[in-house]
Amino acid sequence: MTKNTTPEWTKTQGQYLAFIYYYTKIMGQPPAEADFQRYFHVSPPSVHQMIVTLAERGFISRQAGKGRSIQLLLSRDQIPDLD
Image (cartoon, rainbow, N blue to C red; front, side, top):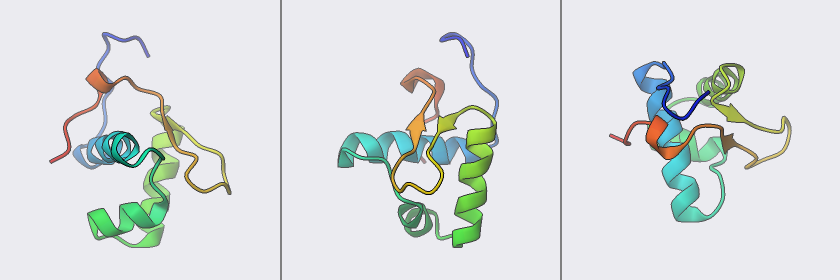
């Protein structure tokens, strides 16, 4: 994705991307799936499916089976603010 292109995602996907950005910035490491569960009040399968979807859409990269391996593939100006 080019820097001037705004990717298209659902509102929920955008919030997950924003959470990844801010969590990583504040905590110094990417969030674990349990961190998403606590913040968004959703089930483990919901979080996992969202992470898989974000990776398939090219918004993040991750190493399957390795905790805290999520990396944003978007620049800060391409993701929304966290509500």
